[in-house]
Image (spheres, rainbow, N blue to C red):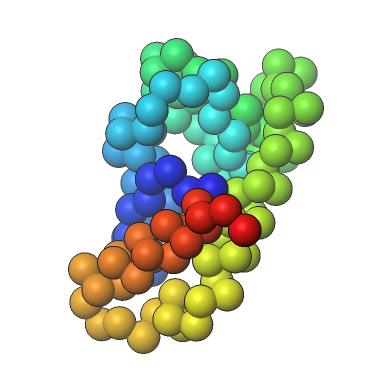
Length: 118
């Protein structure tokens, strides 16, 4: 379930917003991400926060994935499932709102409904 989110422009890379999100997140034992977040400075920030970085390396990387915990990486599907559930809301999937604050409010409401027990 979403704990924190940040709305960025469509042309902005996700890695550029990651440091602010990591700084705002509560303490965690591990942070799981996909290959798009494979960078040494991001791994260093996660380690400095006191968590284990569970990020697979890109295919062209000089280092191997030997130090990555494959068991923890399997939990990444929870993130994908949460995004899929958010996209069930038509206003979020199509982004009808022109203003960032309105869209951000809609995402916050949808995230709140994900936390409700079913």
